[in-house]
Length: 348
Image (cartoon, rainbow, N blue to C red; front, side, top):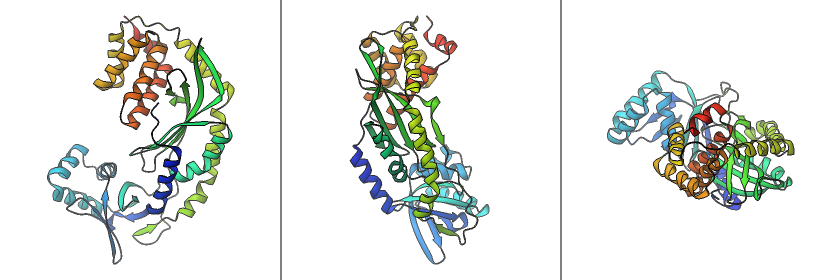
């Protein structure tokens, strides 16, 4: 499992972001894309020019219904033309949007129904309970789109095979910019090689949808952090309850039983064919295919369990933390594949 940054470094960065980020509800009639593709946001006589992240550009493209490939082409080669296109639709069909900013950059362009659930508030509410449960922080990171906290507990430990020990854990994650919901997902942590497998079918997923902002006056309105914190308190209690539920003995025992079953599911195909099948089904990259094949053959375990471990071990070789997490989740997806689908992958 990739370690990312330390918990203290994560906390420090979240505290810094709380000081500089701002949320606005803005009518698109008050927004103008400039020829340099910055976003001008006006409120009366006051104006502010904001850069846009790549992710925010994608959200603008989606909202004004400009195909992303063409949007990116204009952004690269004809930025003034892009500005004309965007401004036409901003002003022809005015609507309220939430603009989330950080360090004077627009990082998200969202519905006015979007409910901000900030990483700082989520961690502040849930981390104390995670630590009370005796969990150890194995990994945490802020990617371009999500925050991740991955923890394990020695309280829940079992052998999948003799000498092959796994611990229970969970992954808490959130996106502040509309790239998915708040999630609490079970994690199985293999001690022999520090692989992590995320089980994504048993997760809490809470989408960021809240009240309309129609009661707000003016073209641009700032959301106070205190207002949103009070509204989120009840939700954070539900997240904490889910944390408690994920780290229960019976839940862990169920996943251990399933892993033991995969250890008995022998692969009939040769390793190359198996990995090629996995690559095609899950659209893996060439270097990921090579890594999985290497770890599968080196491990010498030609079972579904062996494949899971080869996939999750490969996640440690990937530079990008988000992609590493995707591969950890893929391990869980392979565990949960219906038998018919697994047979199609593993058949000779």
